Figure 1 (spheres, helix red, strand yellow):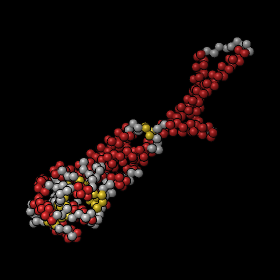
Figure 2: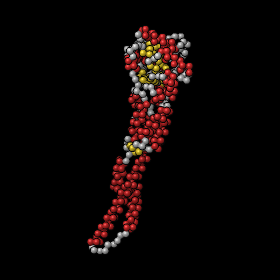
Figure 3: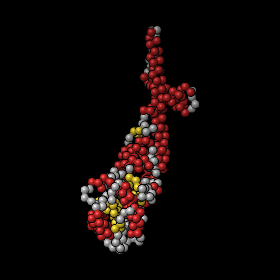
Figure 4: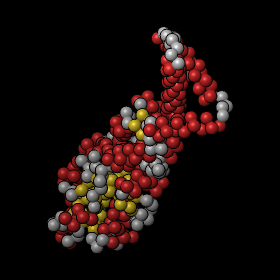
Length: 392
């Protein structure tokens, strides 16, 4: 999903490594030059000392060598040798000498690590921000990822071969931390001693909410739980017929009223029916006109107050990005959701919505809708999701 990010990271690491390598080679070459020059100066000094000793042994009057003459000689040697060695690095010198210098430089390169500066990171973070935004990651989540990644890698020393893997691993850790660990719906149902277990589903029309409810009912049936559906979306044309059709296919009862009736009363009647008939779960569908519509949110507040659901689950589309993020925030602020199901995950090539909705609400994604069949409901797995981002 983040293939562009992986490509940008490789290019950035290559560029940073090349820039750092040039600096290190220059530094290494300078050290070699200094070493070679000092070596020549030392050899010259030894020659002078040996010459003086030779003169003394022959009882010759030693010729005084003034200190300033030695300094002058040293500078002369240094200048000439520095030019000579620099020319040897640049020009085509003897192969043996060239290989010797190359080995010396490589030894320093092995010891020298890459230091990631703020300037280095700033260049990479600009690309990272654009790629994350293009992949439907909300701005506030992008800022958090970049801020945490900066704390993890800026000012750190890395071996040239480790830079890419270290940044990738750091990014994975940040994403895993952002995603809330999902709970088991089945375990929640089993934990409740008194039945029925009531689940209220909310979300915008067109996100696959009613189909998702049918998928949950199908899953519960496979787990040996009985359920009943409540057609509490009493305003959208054909909504009651749609959920009744799912009920017929699944062999599950649907409680409904007339169009325009109070949605809270539909949920309440479904709960009473479940209590009387010892049905394990009540799944309440609800209206989803516009997440900004105050009347809808007030309607949702009433359903929750009357029906007292054990769980309130938001259903959104993976492919809608920031729209899904704004929707889930509005519902969470009004009725406090407990979990998220993302539909159409099978056609989502970006993955940013999953990061955004979880972070903005602090609630877990528990399932992904992966198709139109009742069986196409997959438990959300953080590690599997991160692997699907294709960061390696």
